Length: 444
Ligand SMILES: [Zn+2]
Image (tube, rainbow, N blue to C red):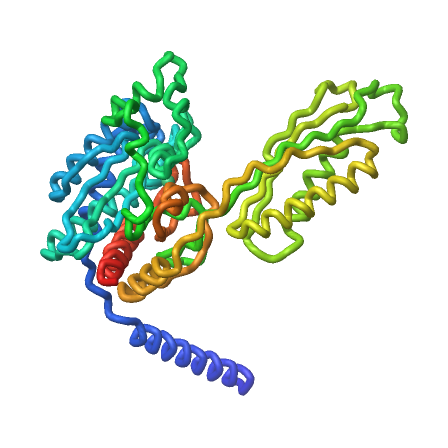
């Protein structure tokens, strides 16, 4: 062996030895596996069984709220609750509550999610949190544990919406923000929301009874799949949700002058679509102009008159902004409007936007976030703080109680699709954190 070759061999051998030593250190530094209270297989089995109600050919479910499939899935869940020893009731808005008594006269610890899906949805959105909550009760029963606070598992009605209401129906009723006339909304067959609410076991005649008074819920915890790719890409099993982002939506109109596409010279045009196109890009730039996770989208655009041989005279488009920070939404909104004003001048058109319709951000409670982090650390599961870009029932509960949310990874960030997937390990990891966080809150 010549000396350069020998040197290279020695170098390779020493780096291999160093690598091996590093691996050994990593292995020995890992904590021994922590005993689990929830049972992964039992939870997975109920997820599989629930997926049979409203199953679609693609392997997911179409269990839309206020349909026969929804009712069948709810019956399955009610029976599971009863088997777990819970006292089950359905409130006026069709929300299912399963109660386990506490040893002291205290407000309830509420936890759960939803089981309805979007059309052609998946088997994990809502289901992991609902069945995870029931698994927590079974685990408490297994251990013969009693809590000071009464516990209530909740399955909110019609979270996804679409058939009659825009979504988050049951939790909106609990927060007292469903307008009474909503119950008269009719589907294509002429059947009303009120009729279907009765079919679910609700009570349209005493609808306001579903309202939950502030102070009656000590804390609300919701376990849910992330529906984004942050946890999956970072390979972190538990997300501690900072809050549910606020949404601001404006409808804007660019008004120019519709004219002949062949006879109007380029320097005499008032092209509304050329201006709107610049506006679309300006939204993206205004959103990216400061650091953070804020997002902005132009998702709708209507061009009039909409003919190949006519210069567009009018374009109507949406501007949607989302962030956890209401002031940031306001600031970016102003920046967008300033950019639109400059574009309008340069393109010789008018751009006008409506006042934003705003869903305020709903922040999670610091005490509940701490309980989730401590529970995860106890269970040996790393966490990551992140916002929820999607809406959840927790945002309505935040109107009358402190809320916390636990996210588990969604494979590839795919959701609202039959391809939605969360592994048995991750679902059970989330339920274990829910179990431990509830016991921590109960002790406080
Ligand atoms: Zn959901």
